[in-house]
Image (cartoon, rainbow, N blue to C red; front, side, top):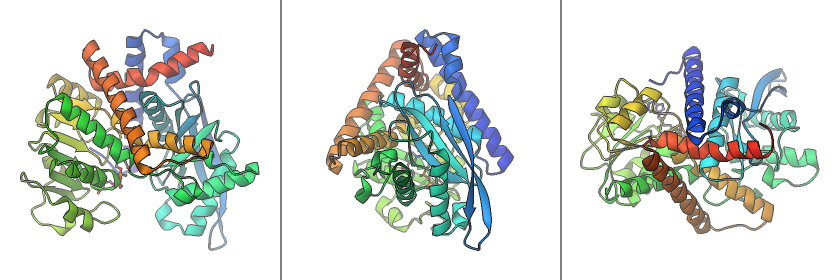
Length: 423
Ligand code: NAD
């Protein structure tokens, strides 16, 4: 199960990295690429570690460590978030940059994957300290990033304000306005309509498509969502608006379950900014009990490693849509596949955010901005296309959708690396 202590977390990250490498290996093999291609793609091409001295409000100087990993730039510049977290490690940004590459390949974007992070605890820092840290990070990595090299974006504990400081710092360094350097900016600085909800929209569209494939009408479908934060709450709202019956939701403290359906708007109005809601109610069940309830669609949207070899046999959903990163273990994927449960993998379900980041970059480059409806139409078109490519491949090759998604995700990177003569 998910763990919060440092060593446990590092082990989980290393497991995630190695299971990602195993699936990439299988995917390349199925596509007929040789071992040299795997050696190129099993680790990022570049990882930079930087030390950032920052003047704190009390006059002292603190030195922070930051990372930027660029997995593969054969298809185009790399793209991916920057997270602020006290336990971020080099292993983690490396693994996440590989996932970004897969998402870019799946969404058919002209990018490879990147990821960055700074070891810090943003909750204990003032706004001035966070601004100096954001600017210091951009100065430290400025040689390897840029609108045609590597484009950062918001991630865990970074937001549009952090993106604005970073964009301003980069523009000052280069001495020209560079909105295309970073995505997830405020609208007035060239941000895109629909960017904040894009991740949850992508998950919702995948859920609609998966339900169609199994002949389950979304109207009235019984849905359980683990997590009621940014992702889970928006997914709950979007599916509720489509007529689905949300029968279970949860947060870190427990879960609410009612087979007749939960009052979603009432819960949305009362959740706090950390996605906590269950503390307001009695009769709360555990997260593990929630995952094992009868439903049509189960959406883990909280943390990694929730469906494992221990509970995969008890999952009763017909469809599992992975909104969180890595909620289903390697062994559990095999068990669910054997049990004929459709698993929509994280790299597919979670590609909505990077797709709208791409749209933001395109709008910045052309200096012409789209309405929220235009963004949503384009997002829907791409997510549906990716879903169908992967679903059809999984059927044709008799493999699970995770392996099929990895095959679609690595193919362009591998081909582009070969055409460039890198291998
Ligand atoms: P968040 O911090 O806003 O919310 C996390 C939610 O999970 C909270 O309700 C929290 O109480 C709950 N939670 C935390 N630990 C838990 C545990 N051990 N067991 C059960 N519940 C727990 O985070 P978020 O932005 O909603 O992201 C959650 C996941 O979904 C991440 O993996 C993220 O990458 C992915 N995702 C995010 C978005 C988005 O729009 N932010 C979109 C798609 C996917």
